[in-house]
Image: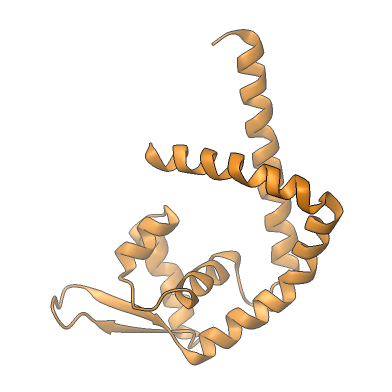
Length: 146
């Protein structure tokens, strides 16, 4: 890799990491009290699923360790946002589903963050956002391959 390509790669990842940090800070400020980004992410994921997921499947989806996912799931279960039950086919496994309270919490979080997200997209303009999405998606897919 030549110096120009190296500088370009470093600039790209610097921008991505900085944008990630800034978005996380903004989200943390507008999420309902007590809800963390990881909680919202799991609830949002489960809300879009038609069936249950195992903690291992969720950990894989979020690219985190099983321990990290277990910690998040424990907090969500304590809050009443998810139901965890034994897997009837394999007693060593558990299955996770969103509860009605979890759907309400997810909807409240979505309502809280939507104005901030919509404002950012509006400020950038739909055309720029549409142009950026394929590039960001391809970058994510390539990173997932590794």
